[in-house]
Image (spheres, rainbow, N blue to C red):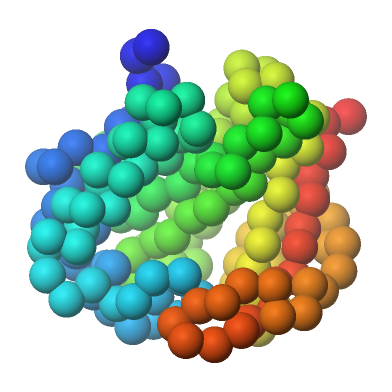
Length: 176
């Protein structure tokens, strides 16, 4: 199966390649990006290559999609977003995303997620999309609510990340 390419006004959403290593390392190596991520801050470009291979392997195994967010104006990859924990038999998947801080608060992630959600509901035949965020990640909460996700509660000590248990706030979007 060919990886789907999506397009918005400012972005091309496409499959990651190893040519994107430097762009991903640029922001995955920043503590403010990794604060709410379930991985340690990247120390080497090999960490970036490893996550690219992981995202692409998930697609190849039919377990999800992770799009590179490439700026049309410069061909620079400024983030990724997509689906994981895809349960076809339950018509649901989890959405995840991250963005280079140089591009925060410019609506890039909302612009990217709109066609990704449409793809999920129309092509993947999802009925439900979940998002799990740290309860203190206010920017992510604002993004999700702007996309009509509903807050559904706090899951206490839901994840074990970076040596400690952390809560998760769950959001859901139902295809109506």
